[in-house]
Image 1: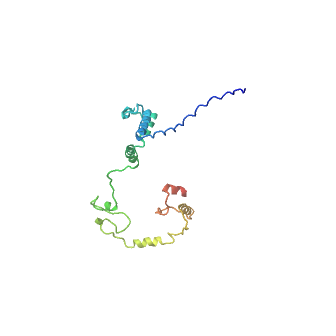
Image 2 (image 1 turned 135 degrees about the horizontal axis):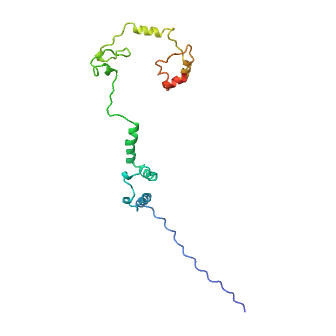
Image 3 (image 1 turned 180 degrees about the horizontal axis):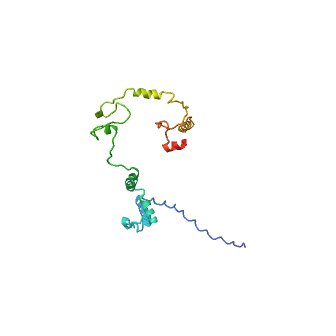
Length: 205
């Protein structure tokens, strides 16, 4: 007789297919605000209730408390009202000091009757732009001719043509090397620009 072979044990049935897990729920705006409130409450103390946050009143605030001041800075630095207060009361008064009323005067005010009822003389460049109360400017005969004769006298005035690419240091170097030496610079502010009197003197020396 043929021997009987043992049969293998039956295989368990395959597990049923499970549907994929549902996606995590999207956080709503209320949940986002709640998480922000939780983070802030952890920094300030309290149980998430703004009324329970450990905010000290101003009269108890210690400006030397670095940790607490850093926390307040992070909370307040982007608030529009805080920025406006800082600009209006700290920055602008320090950098843009001004007065509501200012007293100013010009040559017309000084030579007219607005400030002084009696004037003896008026000093300035001779012209017809005198205050009306002083009348017309009376020019001395021959003054303009004398000035022109002096300015055109080669024994008094000489001229020198500057190169097309001249600059202020080049002009000062030319003056420093002139013979006989230059004694003074008079009314040359339109030519020597970008340097104050001290810087020009230091360059020439």
